[in-house]
Image (cartoon, rainbow, N blue to C red):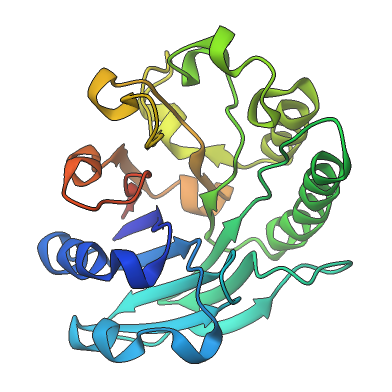
Length: 254
């Protein structure tokens, strides 16, 4: 079973690339972020034509997450996290015996300031939900754009990112607390020394220079980690015409 997290950076603009990816790779489950589309304008017919069912949590112009499943419709479990939020950033579903959450964590820039404070509060709320999922003792995957660079070797340049909200000690500590609950960072298990990127900015020739960093993560509950076969990044899709600035990032489970 191949489970993918994919920040599409606008599903309307990126729909040809998304359909192309679904058709060529045939993943079993896809978690999308940054739909930048309202619930009413989600392109369900195009997704269904590619052979996928979908549940989505949209927001006009910003944010938005979705869960797609090949040949099935995901069963929604929870929309949003408990507590403050008017932003569409979390969607949890049941798919074929697996609990899958698509999440889009706040960027947090500029910092210091209210956006960074919101990021840290959101991570606390995610951790509270993650603890509940662990208590269920079921195979679960928290898949998404975390907007956190966990380690120095997860970026092309520590110096370039040093002041960014993605790499602050508070952001990293919140991510580590999540892992300490018992979640496994799937891609890290396959690349323990880092050097694997999931995002390349559109600016400053970042793609051509391979100046990227790793912010798209799939965290596995112990029951899912026991079924881990492999994890990786479908990097080539970042290089296609009018591609997202993120590459699809995936895990395969038995």
